Length: 420
Ligand code: TXA
Ligand code: MG
Image (tube, rainbow, N blue to C red):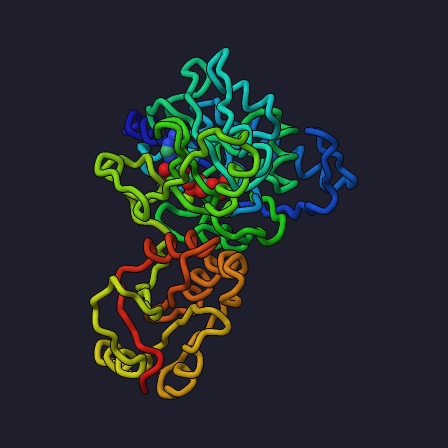
């Protein structure tokens, strides 16, 4: 009896040490009080400084996780070069151990400290870094096995690195003086959080500290680019905040005349890779992603020569949904562009409770990207029975938006918005 009590106490202590199970504290951290002089953060407010020092203490001395805002989404950070600290990320998120993490740095010196000795950064990467760092671009580098623990890279030969531009993220990394591993701060499989309250609702009690720096400006995760394995070309493993069009533009602009301009190949659009699909090395391929707890249906409404699926009218599609919901309290969420034709159709159907979320103008896919995850999470909070998301054109940020929507959706249906 006594022995089993001791064993139980011991197991509880081990569990406590291996995870961050306590009351979650939310501290405001005002990004407008932080600026940078070269790589050094200049902090105008004592309050901001104290919050950043507290966060740094959690990370370094307590080896705990800290949630911090980045310009893309909120990140769940821990020391990247400390396997014990980094393991807490996996327990807090319920993340499968074979899904590698992005390492966040605050300076190019910090990047260099992660790379194999003598490694020379390729010319194309130098151009991308010059234009997009700090910012929403993640690059794959060879891993230095003496520095980066295997838990970060899921045993792969590469490490994914980015330098966030959000002042709170970059200042925290700089003050802690340590690279931070940080996946999106959500339970694995759920939409990524773009506001501190999204994180709190999802992970309260599973982590110690959330820094609230307001809403994330980009709203979708970084673009993940592999320039190491593609015969001089670049592979976009995950479209994101930096658009393919912008990557192509800066390469054309900065590479010397007559030199080979790499192709920028987008997974699934420009190439397929069976081996990669069964390995989790490409974001979101092996595991379910971005799914709120309500069923999501993608509505195809744009003309397509490839798709042979016959279109149904919006009205008859909604009637068909009613047949499945037994009690009459059907609540449908709709996420669509502000200037979509869908809204007139929605208004015309009065016997359904609608939750309408206007994502932004069709001509501004960056605004739609900014709002997408908030739209998914707000629909979930509103308790809709089903969520319908209308497609947008897959250019600029629209490519990343549609990548996330396809992963969130369990069903796709072609709908005709012209017919009655
Ligand atoms: O914007 C972002 O990238 C956010 C913020 C917090 O920085 N982070 C983020 O992390 O989205 P996460 O873990 O949710 O998604 C990173 C993806 C993972 O799905 C993983 O598959 C991929 O990047 N990744 C990480 N290391 C990789 C590697 N060495 N090779 C290929 N893919 C890698
Ligand atoms: Mg994620």
